[in-house]
Image (cartoon, rainbow, N blue to C red; front, side, top):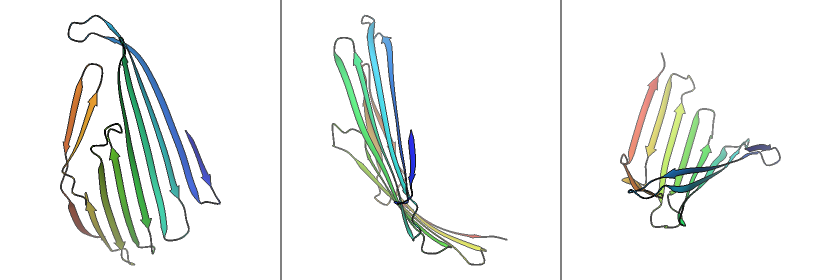
Length: 176
């Protein structure tokens, strides 16, 4: 992992990589003992601005590569990308607006299905700090479910997660 604050750009940059290689043996459907290799490479790039003004940005880009090789030449690969981007707007000490997107592509080889989640958050605290108002909007794009198929040397798994529908929440808090 490497992290560095660049003063003249007012940006923090971070690059984090990890690589795992595993050797294992298995038997599938009464076959002979097979020798297998599994490789996983994760790469994560993050940046965050620290401007003196009202606008700042954050972004995290993650790339994951997974490969399983089985004795006999069978090979299974999967690559995915996840990108989180957030705009932070602070026009005053008591008002804050967050706008965030999350783009997820579970399989780069088959670009059939990708997901874009959009959320917002607006908060305001009164000058006396007695009242705190907050408005949140989640899953604005109203995605119903998230599907992911994982293929390895011995199985195919289909994961489906049903998501909560679009949500709009208004809250008011009072301090005593």
